Length: 138
Image 1 (tube, rainbow, N blue to C red):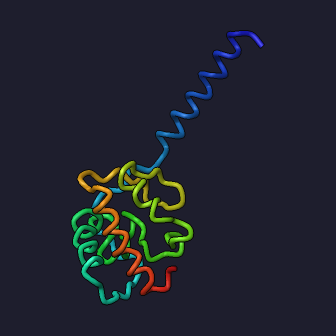
Image 2: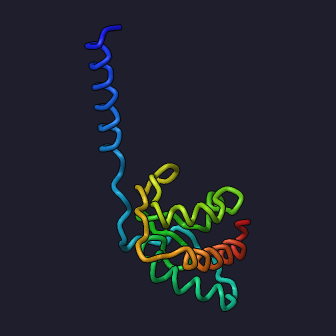
Image 3: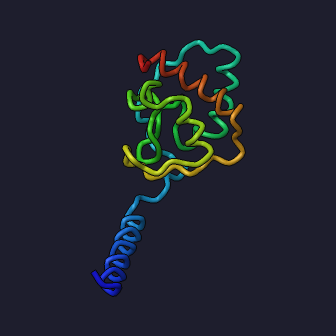
């Protein structure tokens, strides 16, 4: 194969990648979407209450009150997709630090969350997992 053909193929691949990137849905933005799930709330211990406060301050604008999600904005964590066996605690740390490209939901990509450190994420996870357990997501 000659260099001209290789250059044309490389240009086509690059153009395809650019088009694919441009066709991705925009990142989810905070907003007023209806809750996706009906959520039962457990009695929270002190650690989980700390996580709840951090969740409300950093996550609820998109993921909704009590991790119920918001229609058209962001998914609920009261969903078997987010059970610990499928999305480990490590996935939460990565999502907060790096963001997540949309891969199994129709909400667009999630940007990194500024101002939330790993200790905060640990507390948020405690809160999320308590709600998941209360709602049969284990």
